[in-house]
Structure formats: structure tokens, C-alpha cells
Image (cartoon, rainbow, N blue to C red; front, side):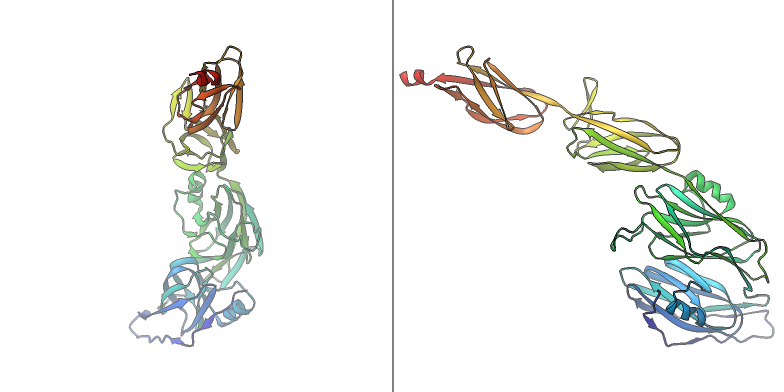
Length: 453
């Protein structure tokens, strides 16, 4: 339920005097009001319209707010019943103009702040214009029913196709965008935008989803958005597109779609709903010896970095991709026809990816490059057993060599265990392994020989 936080007691009486020589009468008030609108609060200021007039109110705010012009009856319904009716409205934005035709009477300017931060709000007192031929809206038709609800997965769109039969008609709707709620704290928007597009531009939307002109656009949000736009006769699409790569989005239209016209009746208005998919998920994942090593992928000009999976959205087509870094290392070298980066053999590292009507998974295989640390002994009789401990592993041998296969590391510690009656030199130490095989010479000396000397 929408609640009022406070009520302005100042009535802005806008008196209009009509000179006999003028066919159009204008009364302009250039003053403005500035106020602080707390988080999750609303405020209403009453004003009056002496005659049927064109009304214009502008506002700007430090945080997105919703703005309405309401009759007293609508204001009461909005406050106590949660009704969605309104005369003029703007969506959740930081600045807008409320422009529309109002018949004579008392109205309210209402502002709602659904955010978590206070808003500094400045708005103009109403500007009234009275053309001689102006007529107030006389007909409203609901062209889509109430309580419509849809779920869009990433890359999908919802399109409401509307036929508007008369010029100067107002398309009106409330709509709400949310991600599916999992708990009390998971109720936030995710990369969803809504547009009102002429039919001729809808094809541009289907081609690009970004590079087209729209009559109206909204921010995504878990708050209610307002579509309230005057249009000429013609065909239109109201489109909501989920451009997120990970989250599905719920779209609800609690009061349906309304068409309001200054004509005595709305004839042949119609609307229909369609859904479709514009983009498909591309998932880059790793396999093999990754050990949560982050790597970066560039796909069709967009980059991501992760130690897990990376998700992109793209339309049908063929696109270049490449690995640009591994574990912070951007240089990738070719060794023995394999790509080596940050101590890994990697395959594949680049290519052309084709999107053709379904999701695409790209698996990058990581294999650790191993190098050898070989201990070579002298001084032991042939066939004598000796051992070396390194990297939590102990290896023994009756030959003169012990070898460890290990990945790159700044320094591996080792300990030599000589047979009874012998000492080893060195008996312990550390050795770096940085892309080059290493050899450590160990000399055993008989303790009896040492005591004799």
C-alpha cells in the first residue's frame, strides 16, 4: 500500500484572467518548491485548475522519484487502497515534466521516493495554458486486462503490441520489474529496461536491442514504473527486455494497459502480448588443473575475469573470443605447439564462436606444466637405498638419481635422508622451479671415513 508521509497545507490557487482580444490565455508561475523527501516516503501538494487547461509541471531530484497528478478521489484511493489510477504521471526518474490536460477542479502533485536514500526534490508550481479549442480527455479504454504477470529469462523480451486509433491519445500503465524473490533481502532489479517504440522502430529493436530510438524508456527497479505518454494514431510496441546474463526478471502489470483519448469514444483500439528471445547465453568454464586460478576472456569486445564461469549474452551470429590473461599474467607463449601461461598448458585459447538459436558452452582445459627437480648422489655404494622428501612426498632410490615432477613455484624445500653410517651434503635446502628443470648434487660421506680422518 502506498502511504503519504506528509501533506502540504499550502494551496496553490492559480487564477486565470481572459482578455477579450486573445484566443489563448496563459498563466505562468515561475516559482518553485524545494524539499527533502525521506527514503520510502511520499508527499502531496494540492493545487486548483479554474478551467479545462493544459498543465505543465517540471521537477528534478537527487534520487529517482515517481511523480503523479491526482484528483482528490484518486489521491484518497492511492493513500488508503493502493489504487493505480492517476491523471498525469512520470516513472521512477530523476527529472521529468508532467504535461497533460486537466478539467477544472482541485488536484494534487504527489511525489514518491521508494529508494533507500533521501531525495532533494525541486519542482515548479503548475503552468497552465488554455487554448481555445482544447478539450479534456473524455474516453478511457482498457486494452489489456489487469494483473498481467510474466517471467523473462536472460535475453528474453516481452512486447505489448498496441493499435492506437486516434491522435493525442495517452497510453497509460503501471508495471513492476523484479528478480524472483528468494528471501526478504533479495528484492533488487537486474539490468532490465522498458521502452515504448513505434512499430517502424520495433524491427530496429529486434536487430540490436540497443541502437534504436524510443518514445519512452524506463529504469529497471523493484518499484512501480509508470508509462504515461501521449501518442499519435498508429501502431506501437511496449517492450521490456532482460539484458542480464544471470537473473530472470518478473514483469507485472497490475492495472493493465489503458488508452485515454480526448474523443468521445476510443474506437478499434487493440493490444496483444508476445514474448521472444533476442540473446543467448555464452558460458565460458574451465576444466582440468585450474585450482581456482582466475582467467580473463574477451568475447566480441566485452571482457570478464573469473576463477569460475563467465557468462555473456549475444544474439545469433559468429563472434571472436580469446583468453587475455591467466592468474594476472597477460603474456601467452607457444611452446611445443601448446599455449603456456602462468604455468599452464591451455586449450583452446581463442577462436570464432557461433551463436545459432541456443546457449553455447565453451570449456577451457587447463593442465599444469610440470618441471623436474633431479637429485644426483655420489659417494654411495651401488645399490644402496637413499631418499629425499619434498612437497609432502618422499621418494627413495637404489640408483644415483631421484626426480620430482612439480609445477612452477618460487622455492621448494627438501630434506635428504642418508643411509645408516652416512652423512649428506647438503642435507636440506630449497630450490626454485620457474620454468627450468633443476639438478641438485648430493654428496654422501661415510661416517667411518670421517672419523678416521
